Image 1 (cartoon, each protein chain N blue to C red):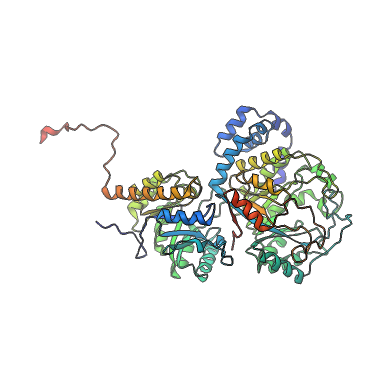
Image 2 (cartoon, each protein chain N blue to C red; image 1 turned 120 degrees about the vertical axis):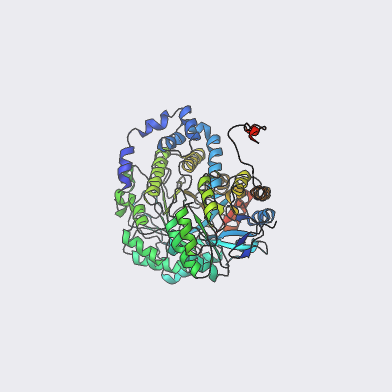
Length: 364
Length: 255
């Protein structure tokens, strides 16, 4: 069982389908109670870009029924930035001349104390890909430690084996986030010229291994800006639907990370406008009505505020993307530059201003 | 005629139970509880944060309300039992709504695991309120496990579709001595009234109130509908006929 087979069978002719959706196709898709793959394509089509308000009304109604007026907040915690990969778009890539750091357990605890004092109860721990310097046993020790300070601990680390994920679950991790970056296999090879991340298939199957290992929540996504967003979102949605149908007990969610211009000296290969971003979110909400949708502080505060009601269910807040950033700010450079620099309280106010409730805790 | 509503031997003042999820703020939730006149409200332990006064939704529940913690997020009996015990340890009382869902696509409950959890928790002295797919055999198993009520779904959670399981609920009302509380799927006050007219002991609503444009007003509307439906049940509605009935019977001459 692998999403790779589905992915391979859907690649051909996709651009044509995305362009050829008619007004009638879009109207029919909007009327469908449980939209299928063809409807998802219609929502993502160029034609639907002119009908975003109609999509938004429907997406808002779907979101209200399934999630209510609630936005869950979380924060990232960077454990280390050592990396063996050469992802051309990433500030942590091996050849990047940045200060490298790995937190020891005492420092992780200091970070946990500082972050939990701010009110965050849902933490996402991250590292670069270095099995030697930040091995699975270290990750498990960190998860165990963080679980003492947070209600929910998720991991966004390099792909692990099923047993290794199971060890993280035993240590207290309940969520896994792993992004394919791009679902375009050829482009993936170009963007990841060296390091273990070259293994496209190994990464693609990682969420499935996480589900098998007992993760409660698994989050997938593509890094928007590397390739045509319509194709990337289509495969993100299919990937999530495949996992949802294969593992009904796991909460499957999606993220919409978008590359910022000139981040790490890298310009997006494919422009994704705010309008495109909104279409992507609406299409995902309509195709996957029960899936969580996350938006990070890569997006600006104003834009994030406008997204409330269009499908987003989780947001990061008060994020520091440098290693050790909470207990000693500006310790290292961040993986990406944060657009929304608002503190946690400011993000909460912004959510309340939209008539939604910020929620800090959603698992115990 | 008095119309006492009892669960586990305790008198409960209102036949309308309210869920606390999905509200735009804790303040609106509180006002909606007041407007609903509900005496029993349910909250997911996963959302309860005792470490934060501001976030702690329990602090926003009006006094005199019976808090029924639910096990939302539990995927099997073991997790439901763990959550229930944790809830009791945190001082949230003995009322527990068992909600075991292992299907995140349709959010349908797992009856087999629910029955297992019900037996364990009832033996530990909890007042067990199981949410389940309306099935008569499973209703009997839940009763034998020690459930204090039966909480069949009207339609899948959050769909607002109304009483899609009507025929099955009628059977539960007819066959079971436990209070039947229709939970999930009721989208409008008229759906709640319909459930009460069928003889349901009570209804539990969350999404339809919390996601309304004016949740407080909608809470009040549901309260009225529940009362109206209950009165109709007590009044014994006339039967519905597909054909007109002559006011002078055709066989009247027989005397």
